[in-house]
Image (cartoon, rainbow, N blue to C red; front, side, top):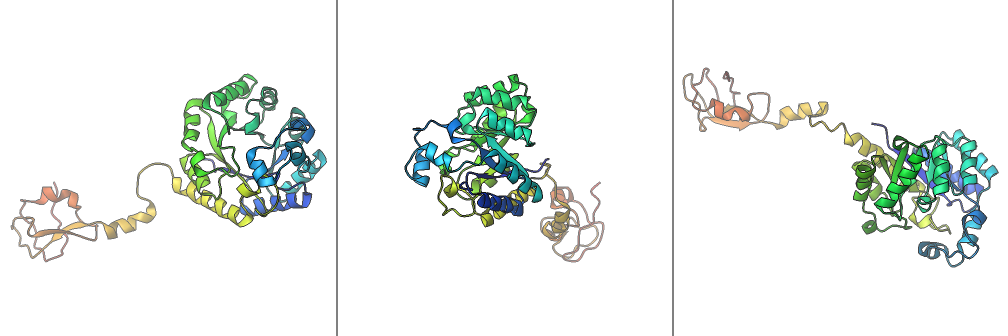
Length: 336
């Protein structure tokens, strides 16, 4: 199995500050993430001037319009190129979500290795077509959508030239932070069963417990918001992990991957020695003379387990002993 692909979602947690953006790259790389992802947009192309903020944005970022908030969080295309170079220097993949056709085409032109479609654009057919025609793998976030909408988006991608084996559908709850009761992780499995695509999880909960559970359920991609400090102003910091927490999450994911194994029920090599010490063998409970009947009175089951297994107990009862035994001697009768 391929390792889980872990994306550190820097998003707009740079607050429009390039130095802060670069710190997020360093944090993601030091934590062992596979990619760090930003957001590529212009406020003018994304929202109307009077578009209201989402409820969570008002709670986390204060009153005002979406336009005003997004305007101060923009990074221009030249800044994106600088960040991509910074990612290369730190050995981590650069990713960004393009929120317009122009932005997505720009990202493709500078060599992103995959395309991320955000939950809000799952129903944006023109953008889906550009993504599909790129030939790149696609990560499709599914927050706020029902299963029929997910199917419609996947069908649109396929019709535009992107086969299902190049798509990973990310289950997502578009709340920041998302309470555990709203997550419904089993829906990730429903997407997999109904749509026959790879599945992943874009997590907005506090902490990393739900993320780890998603990996155990089969998520192949994990996306988690990161921040230098949750005390910073901005819409997404509260639902993000700080650097030390990010490192802990990556360690946990890698441990869960190792623990998942191949699904075949068998003892590990390391267990075999323990098995001998912990299992039992049939032994003499008292002195037994040759020719004496073997009975529940003169037999017992004791550790260690390198003799005849107690699973053969019934085969031995009623037989006559072939040898002389002292108490605790391993019974060595033939089972033939």
